[in-house]
Length: 84
Image 1 (cartoon, rainbow, N blue to C red):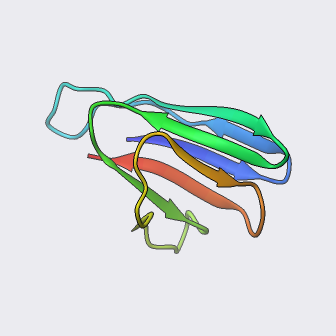
Image 2 (cartoon, rainbow, N blue to C red; image 1 turned 60 degrees about the vertical axis):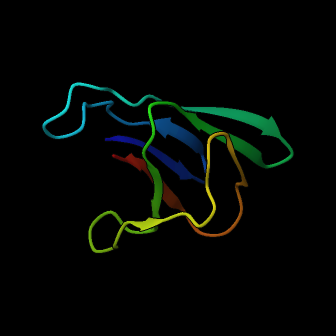
Image 3 (cartoon, rainbow, N blue to C red; image 1 turned 120 degrees about the vertical axis):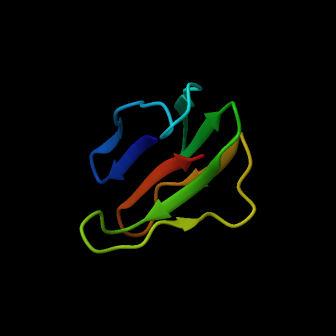
């Protein structure tokens, strides 16, 4: 699972691990587009998921998200990952 964390200080890429029981690694990349916009891009399939709380939050699919996915750095802190 690949994970990117967004917060008030920017974005960071978490560990890139192969899916459980699989051999394909999905790499999640981020590009800052400026003006508070960013793009997430990934290959090898998977579903972009989001949560606002790593401790108690549920990971939910991002509706309509396909690669590349563009969003804005507004609102509360969000965490993203690609789920196989």
